[in-house]
Every structure is written in structure tokens, then in C-alpha cells.
Length: 224
Ligand SMILES: CC(C)(COP(=O)(O)OP(=O)(O)OC[C@H]1O[C@@H](n2cnc3c(N)ncnc32)[C@H](O)[C@@H]1OP(=O)(O)O)[C@@H](O)C(=O)NCCC(=O)NCCS
Image (cartoon, rainbow, N blue to C red; front, side):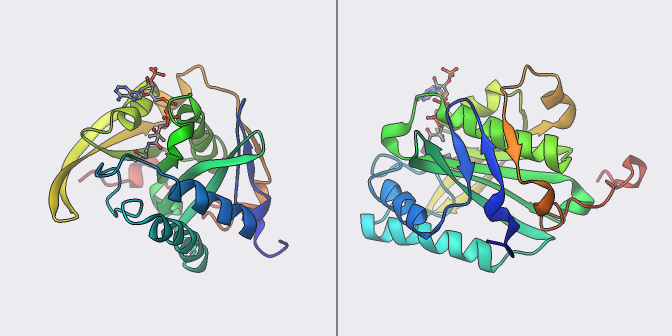
């Protein structure tokens, strides 16, 4: 698509390709979600979008993608990429930011269809998102939030050297849940042996992602 350059952004890891899905790929992604993202009753997301019927879950995926595109602003965006393995859609990787030009901070989120979990794909997805954030966008910090019992998600962050960044108690489906935020700095990311991720089509997207200005000087950042 000529006027939506994000459709040309592609991240390639050893086993995966991450890119904005077209409408039929989005429909496939919705199907993967409706087949199950977590066991019934598990709480993985602040909005329990995958806890309803298969039909509701599929529709939530579609609407989430359409909403993110429709609501896109350079100073408040949510990039939602479909994840492909061997040509098959298997899950979704998010990268979002508010006022990125000023804050240089982004956050990630991810999910895989249940049958694709536990095979190292989540780790590759996070690595790709970190490459885009630090390597291409010039982020200074990337955050991730997981609930206290989400061992796979917490472990992925731990593997990349994230540090704890506070715990919030939030209400999900009428229940209190502890959300653990973790943060990775650019310095910590640089210090790692990084998995190879190829980023293509980024320059055309730079402006849309609010990454086309020099970062704010460090002495202008207020520490409160
Ligand atoms: C979270 C998620 C994306 C991770 O992807 P994944 O492909 O399953 O993760 P990986 O296989 O790359 O790695 C997971 C790591 O956690 C570990 N792990 C997985 N389940 C675990 C458990 N129950 N207890 C402890 N460690 C666990 C794995 O051993 C692996 O660590 P290792 O490489 O040191 O062995 C995926 O599990 C998922 O979609 N879960 C449901 C949705 C979800 O929770 N999304 C995140 C919301 S914050």
C-alpha cells in the first residue's frame, strides 16, 4: 500500500517473519486466536480479549488491528505485526509508544496460538521488537508488563536482562491482578549477544513512528 508505509515494514528472525497482515492474513490470525491463546480461566491480558467465545476472540483480534490503524498518530501509535512461521500465521507482536519523539520509550506485547508456544518463538519475537525499537527507532527504554503468574512472559523478559520497574494492582474481570512491569535500557540491550534480525522498509515509516527528530538531550529529561 503506497500511502501506509508500515505495510512494507518487515522484520525477519531465524525462524519468523513479522509484518502488518493483509485482510486475509488478519482473518487467519483471528482464527489462530479463536483456537486458543491460553487455557480457559487463565488471565494473561489487562483486557481479557481472548477469554470469551471463539467468535468473540476472533472479532476482538480484527477490531484491535482496525482500531490501531484507524487511531494511529505519530505521537501515539500501536504497531501490530502478525508473526509468520513457514508461511503460517502463528501470533502477534505489538510495539507501541506515546510521544516517542520526546520520551524515546516504547512498550511491547505479544501472544502466540497455544500450539505454537514453548518453541522459542516468543523469544525471537521479542528480540525482533527490541531490534526495531533500539536499533531502528533509537529508543532509550523498552518496557513490558506481565502478570505475576505468567512465567513464560516473565522469563522472556528475564532472558533479555530487563529490570523490575514496579508492580501495579489492576482489576481484570472483577478480580485484582498484580501486573509486573519490567524495563530494558538501550545500554543493557547493547551489552547482549543479539540474535540477528533483519529490518526492511523502516526508513519510509520513520516519520509515522515519530522517530524523525533528534532525541531530547539527556539533561533535558526530568527525573521525577
Ligand atoms: C508469552 C508467550 C508469547 C511466550 O512465547 P513462547 O514462544 O511460549 O516463549 P519461548 O518458548 O520463547 O520462551 C519462554 C521461556 O519461558 C520458559 N517458560 C515457559 N513456560 C514456563 C513456565 N510455566 N514456568 C517457567 N518457565 C516457563 C521457557 O522455558 C522459556 O525459557 P528458556 O528459553 O530459558 O527455556 C507465549 O507463551 C504466549 O503467547 N502465552 C499466552 C499469551 C501471553 O501470555 N502473552 C503475554 C502477555 S504478557
